[in-house]
Image (cartoon, rainbow, N blue to C red; front, side, top):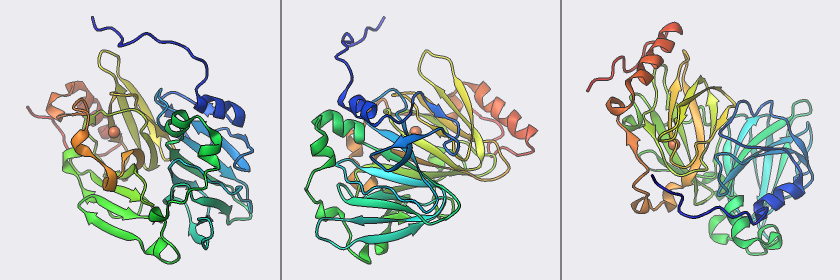
Length: 346
Ligand SMILES: [Fe+2]
C-alpha cells in the first residue's frame, strides 16, 4: 500500500484563506458550480461590487471569482500582483487599464468576451447598461502569489510597472496574431463562441481548439469546440483548471484512479474543475455546438512543455472503460443526435 508522502500538519489558515475571510464574500468549493449566472453573491468591499470566490479542486494555486456590477455601476479601481483572465458571462460594458503615469486604454465588451489584465496594471470595469447587471467570471493565480509572499501590501499596493507586458494606446487592440496552429496572442477576444478555432483531432474526432496568450500572461487559457455528437478523450493534469461552458449542453465525467466515476450535466454557465490527476472528459449531448473556455496551465508563449509531468496523460478511446462510450451513444440517440464515433474499435 502506498503511504502519504508526509503527515498533515494544521498550521491554521493560509494567507489566501486569511484574505478570503477578511473579504467576507461567499466561497464555492468542490469540483462543480452548476450555474454562475444564478450563483449567490455577497457584498465585496474591495471590488465595490458583489462577488463570490470559486476555489475549486482542493488546491491553492489558482482560484476564480464571479463579480456582479449593477446597472450603470462600476467597480473600484484595482491593482494586484497576480494574473487575471476574465470572461463576460452576461451584460455589456467597458474596462479601463492603465499604468502609473500612462494614458488609460479603454475597450468595450459584451457577452462571451474574454480578456486579461496586464500584470499589476490598474483597471476598472463599467457596466454600460442602465437595466441589466454585468456578471464577470475570472480566473486568477492569487492563491499561489499571496501564499508565496504573504504580504498584502506587496500584492495589492506594489508600485512596480511591467512595461514589457502593456500595449499602449491603439496597440492594445491591434495586438492580435495567429502564432501557429491552435495558438493565438491578443489582449481581447470579442466573443469566444464566434472565434474561429483550429482542428484538434488528437483530443477527439471533430474537436476544435485554440490556446491563447492574453495580455502577455504566463497563465494560460483555451477555447474548445465540440460539434454535435462529439466528445473528448479522457486526460488528466495538475489541479486548478477552471472550465466554464460558454455554449451548448452535455456532461463532464470525472474520476480519480481507484475511485468511482462522477457524471455532472452542464449547460452554458456551468463551471467545473478537476482535482490533481483526476481523469476528465467533455461530452456534447445536444443538437448544437458545445464550447467551453478553460483557464489553466501556462500560456503558449510561456509554456515549458518539456518539463511536463509524465503523469499528465490521455487515455486512447479504445482503452477507456467501454461502457462510457456506449452510454454516451445511447444518450445521443435519445436526443436524436448521431455520434461522430458510433463504436470504439480495438
Ligand atoms: Fe483538462
